[in-house]
Image (cartoon, rainbow, N blue to C red; front, side, top):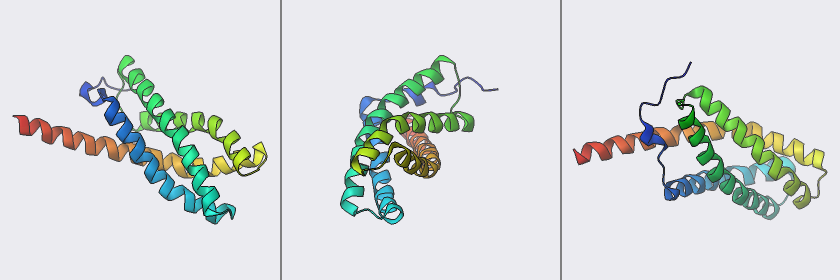
Length: 154
């Protein structure tokens, strides 16, 4: 059972903050995933880099839209951002991204859709925990900053 939100201001995020969150997430993702692709797929760093940049651009837009919708759903159903919600968040985000990325990866790397799907599953197995940990850390650091800001005003 989930409890109503104790701090609804946690979900009032500006477009600037959402953009910052998405860019920070994707810069970290590119830095991790491009070298992984080179090592696992044996492709050039330029191919891996360009693919990860394209995927990153798609993911940033999806991240922005998805997080706004997810936050609205949490507010609507008065749910907390507990571990269960975080697992649902990370899983739903990655499944949506999978539908967008597989065709791009197949085209860019000249793979079949099945090969691109297998590649994306491998990346998801890495990025599911990455997404979960990144957002957990971001939310906790944000809460600390908000508490310090509130204390400074008092």
